Image (cartoon, rainbow, N blue to C red; front, side, top):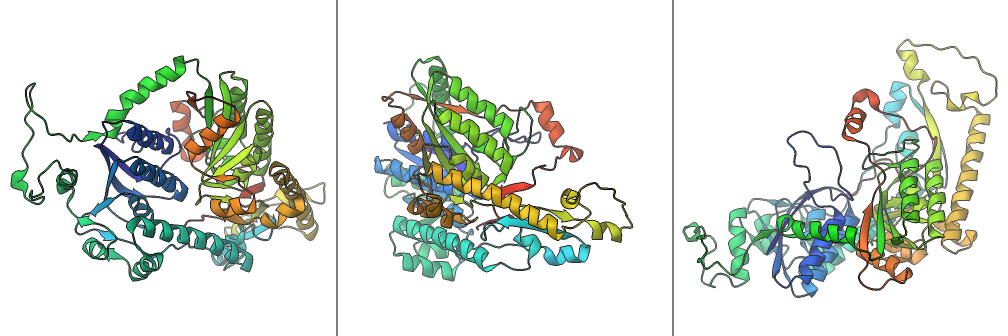
Length: 543
């Protein structure tokens, strides 16, 4: 019995700087979890897996990838048990893949249906004397709406509702099928939620309520390691197992997956390094895209120069026969996105390149994927958002309230375009629109070329509109639905590799510990200098 624990954010890579006293690795990365479950399915000594599921945050696609891996494990004849410590939609969606779901007796299962909220700041900014001066290319490009409006525009509402409806439908159908009920019945339960754990058990949402110390006994009984007459709740039956060389141990042994699999994973890592077998590189690109000229970037940030170096390394390594670019990014700097796209196109001329999308690969994130030979996304990935936005905040009113004044000397009609103490003149606004439109046309043209489509065929699906991975496949913006392992296999197939190839995980060059500490100082923050941005809407969260 392998024991796993997942909570917090399912991260794409390790490396986040933690405070002293924190465990260095609270979670396995998504790829590590998928590898662990794949190894468990292959190991005949592993009879079952048990997951302790804490509060999860964000990452519908990553949760779905792990969920699908659990279902594949069960299809191999392994048993799967879940203990949900605190349950919302993400936690329950993952737990629904397990055959036996348990919660603490007094816990709450907070199932009420998916919801997203967008906060608008225009009223507050008006009171402060701050004016948002933004323009966008694409009527669905809604990044600036929270600063320009007090409510959603019709295109923003249409786009967001279309995505939320698809995610909700996939959540309901997937969880209902796993729990053996009709989707309509699960929707009724969502409408009646939230539920106390005992109520959830009575409604068939979970199987049992137990305190954590009783859960291992329930698993032992379920697997036949305890007699059918054993009382799970009887604490008098709990006896420590005798130890010794001649002691007969119980058949079922509980092992923490990290301790059981880590020695083998380390051995496999050394074997891969020493092996002459061909490699498929998994290049991680996670976080917002920044217009940074630094040769190194911290985890969770995509900087064009740092990622470009990693791309060239993968291209020049003769042992790497194919590359999977793993993207989990809402976008960012348009210019930086284009520079990295160029490096990826050069790579794709030398060896197969497959893009694998995480929970978000939109706008600038989709720009990176356009260079790939094939794009793979999870059904619940947020992608698309082919469009750009640009502008600034005019702080003149706020500074005037504080008694701050400025005088300006200028030699040029559009010098106020970049000033934070002046709005936009009509001429400046017109020039900004032309500037953004030129970038948008280039964006759409490259997207159409990458997808082997005519511009007129692809453009209606652009305009800054977001899609789920499943919707994007239907529109031709994405090739196939699949997880990381599927993308790796696809890259290997395109490279013509026989079974036995190895995976090499690559990241951008990372700064040392002292540089990372310095970047956390309050005066060390840097404002992104690129005023043409390819980004998702402000703080898009689906709960």
